[in-house]
Amino acid sequence: MSKYSMKAMLVIAVMMGLGLGLASCSKDDNAVINPETPDGGVPGDGGQATLIGGHGKVIPLNELFSDAIIADGSTLTGTLDGEKQPYKISIADGATVTLDNVTINGVHIMGDQQCLWAGLSCEGDATLILADSTVNTVKNFNRYYPCIHVPAGHTLTIQGYGSLVAVNNYFGAGIGGGFGINCGNIVIKSGTVTATGGGAAGIGSGFNATCGDITIESGTVTATGGLSGGDQGDRSLIFFSKKFVNSHNKLYLCSVFV
Image (tube, rainbow, N blue to C red):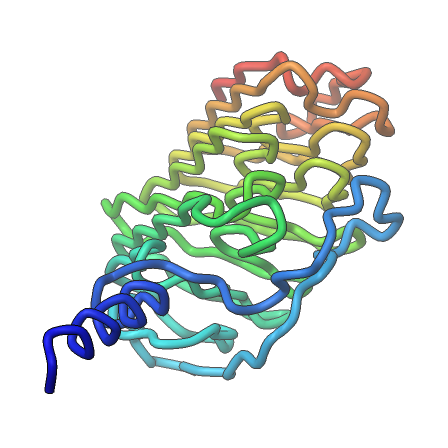
């Protein structure tokens, strides 16, 4: 084989990201973010995801090689490296999933029209259990999406005696919705939860989006938001145990300690 043929093969390998750890979201390359998506869904989402796990099953994230929907009763553990594993991880509708020292390093890699998903996406109602004394970190993939997405009309419940950190450096919330992406209800029953929004609420919605009810029953919760969280959207309702506070669209300014 000539040296020119070798160079050509190397160029092809680099372009395709073969064996070089280059991330590429092959799905939805031509999708367009619509900040006015009325149902708060995940515009442009596609591809084939496999339902995996189940009661008593432990799923190491570092061993995943495609999009995955996590079944009820599963335990997630380990690290999803967004640069090498640009996969959408979803929680099945109605599922209860345990997080056991999970790190989802979603990385905004290619551009606004790729990797159109959160770090962790709920397909409907979901419960996340934070395993005792664990630290769990979730970052978003696309810049307009939250770290953890709760679809409109559904409820995410967080409980357990571990910690959850969701920090968004772009336009989405830590937990909830994103830029033009509505979110449902969020209930925190226990645990240590730290949620930071980019141009959005720490817990809640983003610019031109709405959010359901946010209920904090117990635990230690810190929610810090950016300048656009909840702006031009409906009011979010925040419940601190039995105490009611109407946020008047100011959730994005709140730092909450319970």
